[in-house]
Amino acid sequence: MSMVGVGILQGLMETARNFFGSYFDKERLTTIQFPEERAPQIEASRNFPFLVYDGDDWQQGLRCVSCFICEKECPPKCIIIEKSADKKPDAVGKPQFYPAEFKIDVSVCMSCQICVEVCPFDAIKMDTNFEQGATGRFDDLLWNRERLAKSNDYYHQIHPTEAAAVDADLAAARAKSAPKPVAVQATPTLDGRT
Amino acid sequence: MPWAQTLDQIFPLAKHWLMGFVPFQLRTFVSAVLSVAPVLLVFPLLFAVTTVLERKGLGRIQNRYGPNRVGPYGFMQPIADGLKSLTKEDLVPRDADQVVHLLAPIVLVLAAFLSYAVLPIGRNMVIVNLDAGLLYFFAVGSMVELAVFMAGWSSRSKYSLLGAMRAIAQMISYEIPLVLASVVVIMMSGSLSLVSIVDKQSGYTATLPHWFVFTPWGLMGFILFMIAATAESNRSPFDLPEGESEIIAGYYIEYSGFKFALFFLGEYLGMLATSGLAITLFLGGWAAPFSFLTWVPSYMWFFSKLLLFIAVFIWIRGTLPRLRMDQLMNLAWKFMLPMTLLNIVAAGVWNLMGEGWGRWLVCAVIVFGPFLVLSGSLKKRQRLQMRTYRYAE
Image (tube, rainbow over all chains, first blue to last red; front, top):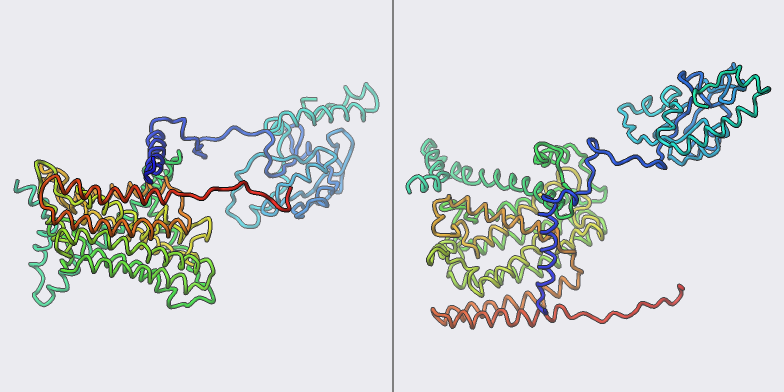
């Protein structure tokens, strides 16, 4: 056909089919209505770091030994750590310092995961939670230790594969650092899993 | 049916009744206010509804939901949008011409509103029945160009100036076919008054109305008028003046807050007014489409036709991509202009040949023969060569 309107009419038919089809065929509407519906969580997604702790008590179980590596490596310098005066057993069982204060500024963090990559103690990991809206400009955006601490169980929940590998590594380290085979039974492991 | 007549005339009767309470000295003033106020109320409301319908319609065309959060089915969205634009900061560029920058959106909305003065939206429902109503409509409509250029020039921004230049080039080019397409109606009805143009189309043969669109020259005139009207109101596929992907928002890029909303309001009011004019000229205005439906109030017919036009505008916007500048100009000067001139010839022939099937045939040949030829020339495209790279590869 040489008439100029034919292509336009074909296009109009196509959009009309979409328009009416979207009312009858729910398959067409691929939008997920966010607060009510959610897309399945992707294991590899990452948003903001959190501190892993073993066991039930977050203060006792915190794996962080306040070595300051992440604070120094953080490109936008959003991590603030204060070292403790005393020591507590770390994830492997050795007495270590722990962070008396550990703060991350949510508004500055750029989710680069460098803190996670440099941490030799598997103490800081990336969270998948992206709903971090806050009403306060200062305190609400500067997350402290308590807010950052999340259990190893939660870590298993969001990143199962990665968490299993970390647990295996830690178990190996625990076995290596234990002075005698007898002592392994004597010292209770900090997390119930091992 | 007396009750149908009363319902049809309820607004003129109500006005007449209200005027009875007004002292003689104030009559002229109050009468004007009573005529203008409904237009100022109804058409912005229609604009608000149109924005929701447009967003929802476009969404469905793209297999999305569109706005569905504010109020039932998202229909309170315009209220939220209005509040948002009212509370937003009103930024004026430092180097802008402050006065003109402020005046531009006001002139635009004013021009859009002024054109409603001559539009008959129902039987006996027109603000002023000017003898030169159609001429007045086009005269006021060309104020829009002034407003657009004021906005583009006063902003002192390259994007707004580019957008304004494009808008002027486009609107002037398409104003000629717009006016020429409506000349046929003036020829056939012998009047520039929109009220008498509607009266001329009010008869029925069997159940079918005597609308001008049901003649060869009327159909062609209507199509050409609608293309030109789409271009005049800067709507897709003729939205070059504000092409988001090229010059961001064109002439109103430097506007924010409520001035930006005023631009939107003006644009939609212009679109509704031109649609109303197309209805008046070609689709019998407020007349019913079948003689057995004349009991439905006349203003209902006008607004149903207007809603139909809005739907088609949305449909077109959801379908067609934006034209290139040269395509736009080619369409205006090489297709629209010759077609409108031929259409005038066809209308003249129609008038001279008298009743009978002969004039149908002759007019159809005059109008649709060249349509095929000219549209073929529009489609002629250059042969594309394989792109070669001199340095890459």
